[in-house]
Image (cartoon, rainbow over all chains, first blue to last red; front, side, top):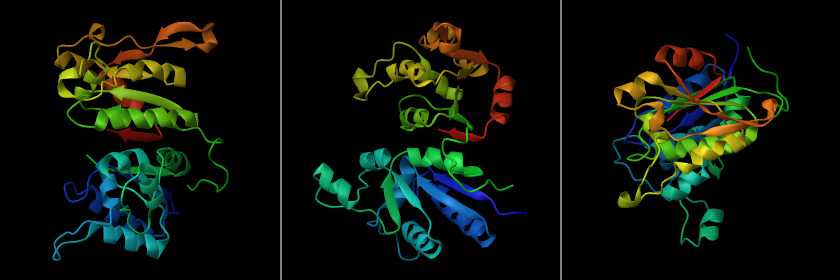
Length: 133
Length: 144
């Protein structure tokens, strides 16, 4: 089978839902098979994957770290929806400055941008695969 | 089948279907679905909305959220015609199962530029079987 360009959307919140774990396994497997990941877009409670301030128990997986490391290894484009992120307190430095907040929490390898990035992934990718409930 | 690299945005038109399955309040899904539809409208794709299960409540008229302290965003559906979002499919079975009819829904219309700007209804009630066929025709399906 020839390589496919995939867009991935994650709408399920981390730990509460398995969506971001399943998407991680899916993206890893797709990359191992030689497919291209055009973008991973985080929406709804999925944006909560993108905070670096989570402290899960040490004997459990760290969903944010998994994604950050995978992004670094494969130069993945991890995009957090700005509107959904603002509601849920996920901020990068610029956004924290603009909103007058005293800190930012965006995790390494993630960037904050608009919903248009998700639509673009739907247009550009051969398949848009959604993980959520 | 791999699409060619290149300036795809603008040159490709895909069929986007937004599937709305949840009540308008109680969870954020309906609102955040509407936000995607509003942004997505700028991309000049073929956009269709489907309302089924409790999602049919999203279009009911006379919504009043005053007592729950949540913004009533239902008027925004009536503005979608101005963004060329004119295909609203509502599943008949979901309406019937909830004791609703078309009369319980907001009047949502658009002006048809191909027909002398005549005002036409955006909502069409379709059967579960018809909706399945509509889903099968899509390129991208986002379900909320």
